[in-house]
Amino acid sequence: MKKFLLSTSAIVGVGLIAAPAGAAEKIKLGLGGYMEDYIGFVGAEDDDVGAGRDLAGFDIKTDTEVYFSGSTKLDNGISISVRIELEGDESATTVDESYASISSDTMGMIRIGGDDAVNGGAYVGPDRGISGDYDNWIMEANMTKNDNAYDSGNSGDATKVSYWSPRIAGFQLAASYVPEPGNNGGDTPNYRTDNHSAYAASLTWKETVMGVGVNSQIAMYREGTAIVGDEPGESNYNVGLRLAYQGFDVGVAYGRFIEAGGSGDVTTATDNGRTIAGSVSYKSGPWKLGVWLLDTENEGSLLTTADDETRAYSLFGEYQLSDGVLLQGLVFNVDYDEETDVDANEQSGGWGVVAGMKLSF
Image (cartoon, rainbow, N blue to C red):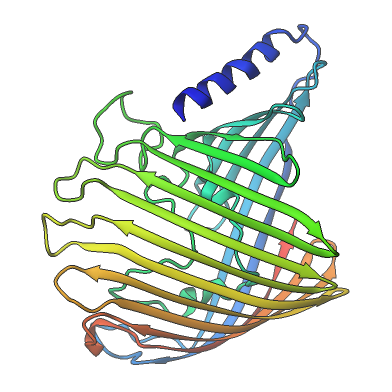
């Protein structure tokens, strides 16, 4: 895969060198982003157990991000773009992702910088509105879980190089290489980090068949480690399918996570397990309504034989009030089963009602 990525980069590089000097204008950055504000009321089970974990029944959540982006196109058809994302909340004023992209219609795209690995960047999963935020309202305690059917390990937004092929007959192949997962390119090159290099691959197929829109994915992520007892690291796999027809949308995703999990230290937790998620939604004009469900199971602590389990269900809705103003809401229920089955170690779950809006600019 490394040779493949390097050879592709070389092809793009030759194209850049061949471009006449001054053939394109200087990149000018534009401003964009979003702000989400939600009000919710929850009724949590076991909300007063443990050391001061009494939950507030009423709460407000916000999420804000501002991004700067721009691009230029050379005379030979190659486009070069940049994007910098800044977290805008009071407690998180940091850069989230920043990367540069080199692309053309015939050669595909090379992206270098801090961005999602392709198994997550091309993720095909169920429609869920804001349903996946259930654990922001009733948090799990002492649990291992995977809310999405994909897992990019420790790579997150660490610096990486990714290649996206052109979409041919509905198919698109993508691959990522992460030199240092968990380290944003700050360590000395070739430094032996706890997390060895990682790579990801994704194959998607997107087409319309007899009036039905089909979007599907099969993907994997592999990460090594130098931690004694955690060898050989982790390997994660996911598949997803979305079908759309006359306003109806049906989606399902499955993820399998394989992690050594500290076999040399029995107190270490592991994410070994699986996630299943699904949804059915219907959109008419500015309205959309849907149901979403999630079922996860992870091994957790190696000291116990039981597993951590999460089951979440929701009814969600959206209304597009105007361009850039989206009203959203959901009613949800979540059930947490922490592997020790001790009330003092868990919040069993509960229900909640959430409403708010997303402003895009």
